[in-house]
Structure formats: structure tokens, C-alpha cells
Picture 1 (tube, one colour):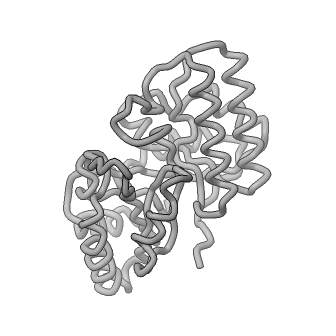
Picture 2: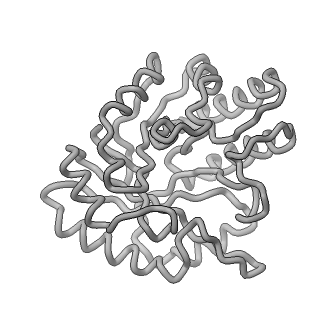
Length: 251
């Protein structure tokens, strides 16, 4: 792989390793571009502090560390500084205010939750709720239409186990909207590596039929996960027949 734009740090509270270790692992694996996209903080009105994402107090250190590494390793690799975030419209203004003074290169969309963390609305939990499925699709489409995000991470995260015809209808709606907005869909290596409910073969058959483009994302939560050539090859086989985006255009 030439580039990976989906790399976490231990600040998200469920990843391991130092920032430098991720950079050195990426160089060893032959990457030309390493994009960090740790879980972006949200400022929740009720004061809730998430245990699955970076805290607001850690944003400064995130940028200081990665800017320093970017300069130190500039001859070896291009380092980009981004975030992975959900689309929560009522909270966007506060998030923008938090990040406005930092040199943010990009963001990717990943709709892990339907609303605030901790409210039993994780998209990866089994559900037969048509309402939840539709809400997931609506949020993904709405987020991408803002132009804030470069691609949709693990679009098949939603673990819908209800009527297959409804799943196909809603996922087709999602794929068609992403194609219309020229948004890549991520084939997620971590899901393959850890045997999660994604990548979901049902979803990727729909994406192939619609004609979506795809980007492979390592979703690395340890430095070692940046080097998984066998799983990259498996991912490419799953993407067979689709246009694979090797590098994003980031201004």
C-alpha cells in the first residue's frame, strides 16, 4: 500500500503504542504516506466524557507530537494529521471551535454511534431495527454532503440482522449517495483481521453493482497492524472489479 489514512494513537483509550512507533512501522512497511486519524473529541452538552476517543485536553499534544514527527521523518514519509469522527449535527459548531487553530489536514467519517457515546446506540451491535438502519444511512449521507470528510470508514459497520430486502434497499441508497458525491468507501483491514461483522459481503456486492470506488484502510490500533500484507491481499480480492483509490487528494 502506498498510503494509509486510518491510524490511531493510544489517546483514543483503546489503541496501543507510541506515535513514533507507528511512524517507524509505516516506514518499515514501505508506506509513502501515513495519515493519523484518531477518534476526534466531542464536547457533549451534558458533560459526558467518552472512554473510546481522545479527550479535548489531548488535542494539543496530538498535534505537537505529530508535527514534530512530520518534520523529523520528512525525508522518509509524508505524515498527515487528521481525525475520524461521527456526524452529530448539533455538536459540529463546538467541535469546529475546538479544532479551529490547529493544522488539520483531513477528516474521515465513521458513524460508530447514532447519538452520544454510552447510550447503547453502537452501530456494530446486532439490531433488527429498521429505524436504526435508516438513521445510520441518513447520518452517513448527511455527513458526506457537508464536504467535511474525505471518505466513509467501514461503511458496513451497521450490524443489521433484519429483513435482507430492507438491508439491500438502504445500503443501495447509501452507496448511490456516496457515488453521486464521489466519496470512496473504506474496505477495513481491522475488521478482517479481528473477525468483526465487517467487511460484510452483502454490502460489497451492492457497492460493486452500484460502481463505487474503494479505499483500503488499515484502521491500525497498534503499530504492528500497519504491516499486514496477507490481509491487504484479501481486501483487494474482496474489492475485485472496483476502482481502488491509492492516494487521496489533500490540499
